[in-house]
Image (cartoon, rainbow, N blue to C red):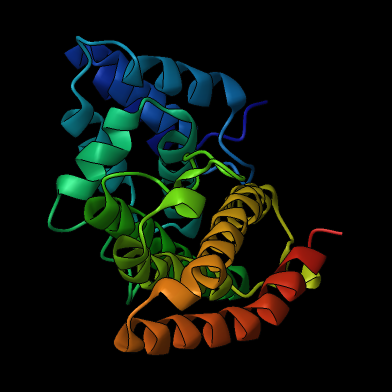
Length: 255
């Protein structure tokens, strides 16, 4: 028997009547079942972001609406689904999120329906902050650090010093917001938080590769910089060293 509640079925049925297949898929991805969003619903939504006739703002609004639910399960799954689409969907999805003035307003979210609700609410507040930061850094950079080319001829490695000095603090801000999720292995107790953690883990590996490329570029161009720029570059390098420990601690959780 399915773990969907009557509320889940009614919500999905409402969208069936109004004819919005995308909204129905969002509802099905964000049911009260304590498990990560089902792959078939995520795949459907990814495909939808590539269809020119699909209304991206409407899709995002349905996700934001699900994130106003009182249940930690529904809210957490709405965040996981949004993150999944930011990573795997057509770039116009993250572009739209970046163009909005407000995204997730969950800094006071609290599900009081049990001890599990209290525990998970903490991670929901942290996770929503990271997703807001991810969209904000896209707005500032006009690209997603996790999606750009890495390595010797990558974006951060070939960036001009002036732009690099402006970009690195933005990247650092995104990495900091991710590290603040701060989960321990014994707290990965259900399929929903596990799905969120896996997306964060993969983002961190890509973000850190960018960060590393940026630092290499800074060090290579250090002696070509003006005095003020050198000071900024040293500050960025110092912050990089302190974050290395925190990054390795976060990655250890996945072992």
